[in-house]
Image (tube, one colour):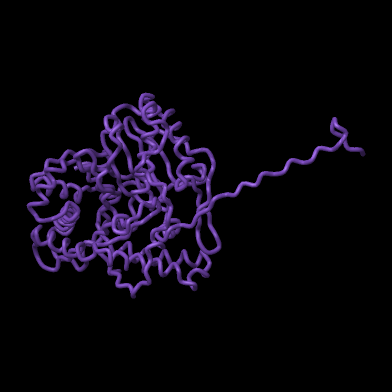
Length: 440
């Protein structure tokens, strides 16, 4: 059979295929753990949200996400399973659908039902919620993305803002993707980790999938005055009040065979001059071990200050993450297939998780560009529940107000109640807000 000729009497040459290289990236040292331990009951998802002055327009929010996502390499990713490690690959699919919030927060993110993305955006009335699987980034990276999403949304909502700024990213927004763990790695000395079991909170659990959130609002000048009276930083004071609440509400001021130990994530960027949007934090711990009858709050505060201050040095923090990176760099470990690595990482995680009563993290003081401040009322943040830790606390500050947010899967909020009562007894005025899952 003869082939049809082109009108010019010659066959058309086939069009060359345009090959597009797919971008890929390694996980940072901390991120390797999260795909191994994440599941429905332990999602490893955190939330940062922003409350605006007007009701959210979902169509504009979707448009804002569609515009912002392609500019953030650190969020435009899917997770892949390799022979030896998990890795990231450029996603490139349409942005996940923005939805009105109708479930409990911090649920496990099923990538195959989310256009392969590892984050979600929801809204409720005046609030935009960003929920992030921790494998992507820590709270600083999440906040970086949320602020740009909010700025873009406000420019679409108020065209006069677009006229003043154009569609540029904020000058303060980092796009840096270096692995700061590897960059600052020093050959480690032998580790001296505490893996002894801690006192774990007890109580009846909420129903399957239920999740309690309680926010406590306080004026920062008032809080600072109380902290100054105790000779403590805000972090030291709040962690001590939490431990005091566990001691009085759960242990009823009795001795315990196990210490109350709180994990405190430390943002490493200020210590090592980093602006990375990958994970860059380590855990230190605040510990109080009640071995006799009846301690005062001042005694608990002194124990917390001693344990935290001894760990919050550049040298100690470098030692902690260098040990972790050193394990990752081991040639023997690198050659172990991923399924065997996963088994080992699960065992290590279980030991470390049960070595802490809770986690309290401080996102810090949040600043936004002056142009957008009239439209932004508040920020909130909180963590998902994890193995052995049934109550967690998250701190964030904005515009003169500090919000301490509890997340919990226990039906009795006795620890939360004791925490806010202690603040009030110290003279701090507290306003409370909850999602209504538990009361008291």
